[in-house]
Amino acid sequence: MKLEVISHYEQVCKEIMLLNSHTRFVKIINSHGRVITSAIKNNIEFFVNGQDEAMLYMEVALRTKMLGDFDPFLGPMHFSVYNRKNVVIMEFPIENATVYVSSEKEIDLNDVPYKILAVLRKENILNLV
Image (cartoon, rainbow, N blue to C red; front, side):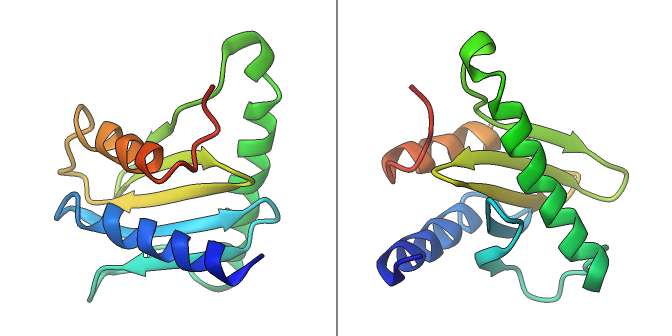
């Protein structure tokens, strides 16, 4: 991946982090499940580490690909939200990658995902038609 693309993605991560104080981290994961870049809040607890974290991101990449297979029938996916016991996860498919956002439970799900979509639209990296 080109350095200017990675640099652009770094800026996107930082911009998303600034949208809401409840955002824990933002990672951009490529289609192979590797983290391209990230922005992380200081002093957060990571619930998944090591090999489990690698497996999680591979699963994110696979899920994004599989959900994309239904785009011709259902239209492109804008985002997915997973409301877990400890965190809220939001995933946004972008050009050959996924923006993976981990947030505290207090996040406003009627507002923040749409603000993130607006950032991704502004940065021209969404797959939406």
